[in-house]
Image (cartoon, rainbow, N blue to C red):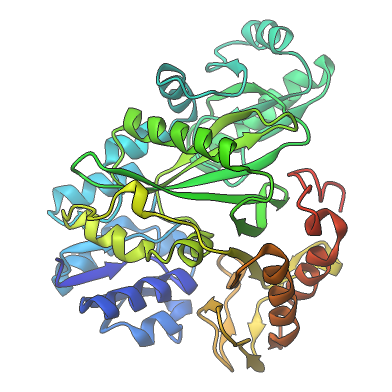
Amino acid sequence: MFPKILIANRGEIAVRVIRACKEMGISTVAVFSEADRTALHVALADESVCIGSAPASGSYLNMPAVLSAAIVTGAQAIHPGYGLLSENPRFAELCERCKIKFIGPSAEIIRKMGDKDEARRTMREAGVPVVPGCDLVESVEQLHSEAQRIGYPLLIKARSGGGGRGIRRVDAEEELENAYLSARAEAESAFGDGEVYMEKLLLNVKHIEVQLLCDAYGNVITLGERECSMQRLHQKLIEESPSPAVDVKLREKMLDAAVRAAKAAGYEGVGTVEFLLTEDKQFYFMEMNTRLQVEHPVTEMVTGIDLVKWQIRVAAGLEIPFRQEDVTLHGHAIECRINAENPAENFRPCAGKVTLLHVPGGPMVRFDTALYQDYVIPPFYDSMVAKLIVHAPTRAEAIRKMQAALCEMVIEGVEHTGWMQSDLIAERGFQDGTYTTAYLDGR
């Protein structure tokens, strides 16, 4: 096991990883920017190193600075959390060169699955269903001919990156070229890669993902599915496990496809295979995330398996001691992402001082956050400041528990999305589980 791990992240995920390390007896190193000197992860870590200026580009994305901090402090491994450098193959390569273990899959796998076009081809060869579409678009002539073959509406999608960037919906041929050029420009700006491909736009779909845990000995374990369809502008707001739309037979098919996907990729570590599920219960591969997911707590709640600890153990070369038949799902879990944004003002980000904080409590209520009273939320980073997770024997009970927890949660001094989450959970579309990724379109 690693004696010391550097956490190359900030906010609630850095706090989450530090807690797991403390429980495992592993020393921790936090890195921080000038804006995060008073951050909770800095206070909780055994050591901390300032690595640069407030913008992430000058600190958390500064690979030489992060690696230098690991070398200076003697950290044997780096946990990247999610976002930032977690899916950067170049960073994984540099860790290997510096003889520091990157807690995640190899650079080769990250690059292969991060290339959405190559990932689609890999899945097709493995017999995993993929959304009808085409490979990379090389010319305007090909653009038009492939669009005619696929049919409208369709999506133009960036080969690299994620988070909804480099994606354009096209409903008619007259929109095609402008959308193509716009998607390429955004992808080039966001990811340094302007290559795009096209997919048929599947309407009224659900976003279902399967959690994987894989080791270096060929063991591939699935840990159930998560429902992630409550989204705004491709950003998830509420997640739950298990999905209310997936029955036993469909779950078996999706988990089997996820196993084939992992084996085709030669995957090692914690990862997620994401599917789109249509109204007629057909599912299609969308992408594979080669990192820990924001919504991993709902899987932990229904399986009792600590994903961060197993991510570290697998990276250290340990074999998973349990088998697929040992994994059972118990009850139902729901997670709400709490963002420092004002939904009443088009989700305007709200940095500032937290003047009062009350954390909801009770049995099977979890609040993952880096907030504390009088903490000043900086304006430089992602607006998510907390995750509220609940677990109960049934979905109906979990919904009521979440509503009670949201009512109890108090974050004063900044606007946040808690009240909006409470309203969404009370709506019929969520209550009956029929909501799709288009549920919030136009809001």
